[in-house]
Amino acid sequence: MTTDACVDAVGVAETTEAYYDSTEADSFYAAIWGGEDIHIGIYESPDEAVATASARTVERMADALPALGADARVLDLGAGYGGAGRALASRFGCRVDCLNLSEVQNERNRVLTRAAGLEDRVRVVHASFESIPGPEHAYDVVWSQDAMLHSGARARVLSEVARVLVPGGHFVFTDPMQTDDCPADVLQPVLDRIHLDSLASPGFYRKHLDALGFSELGYEDLTRHLREHYASVGRQLASRRDEMVRRCGPDYVTRMLEGLQHWVDAADRGHLSWGIFRFRKHG
Ligand SMILES: C[S@@+](CC[C@H](N)C(=O)[O-])C[C@H]1O[C@@H](n2cnc3c(N)ncnc32)[C@H](O)[C@@H]1O
Image: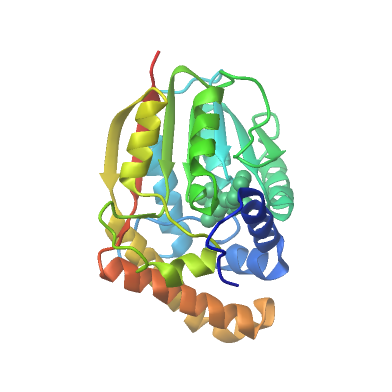
């Protein structure tokens, strides 16, 4: 499927939900990441397991948070299978709401959370981050990993983050982005795969969050890991091709391999940016 030039945010959310709810996508992500995470890893070596590198990203982001007590409330936007939520609840004893569009992923999240004995700390919420349920000032930290790229209304997502955070609250996130100086149209193969007409850029987040009353605390540029990650997932998939064709079907595997290569190519051309952003809402 290709993107319509004028992306309708509701249509985008429906397409994304249907994609992540599909058996093929669920089988693919659970098999390659091990069922906990679906985000870009931080690699210590190119042959490191995707799951190990992905867990490192969660750790690195958590290290960047202020100390969280047991009464801290965290919201994970686009939480996938909830691996980060469980990691944060285990490490800090805090409460985490995992907000996510895909009920297939949410169900796995509930099962894993019960198995980890964390159901009193981690709550799974089926919703879109473009319209976050609940009152203003409900959270001390908003967290998000590689999810906002799927939005056709990112400015609205950021307004929602500003609404639900307490004054002084922290917003920590990663998102695969285009560079601020990325030429027009060069990312079309990447965009077609995620059914969107744009990626955000670091400048986009800085501009909108500044206007919403946030200060930037830091951006750790980790773009080389984005390249490493998509290449690594591609190698994993190719080496397990027969098994993955049985799980996800030949078309899904072929399209995924092509899509992963588009990300690698765009990274090699210097058009992508990825890293850990930290912002604080003014008190
Ligand atoms: C690449 S996965 C990342 C999942 C998770 N953050 C992680 O790191 O494992 C992107 C996630 O964004 C979620 N998502 C996409 N659009 C969303 C929306 N509008 N509202 C809530 N979640 C959304 C998908 O369901 C999917 O779980």
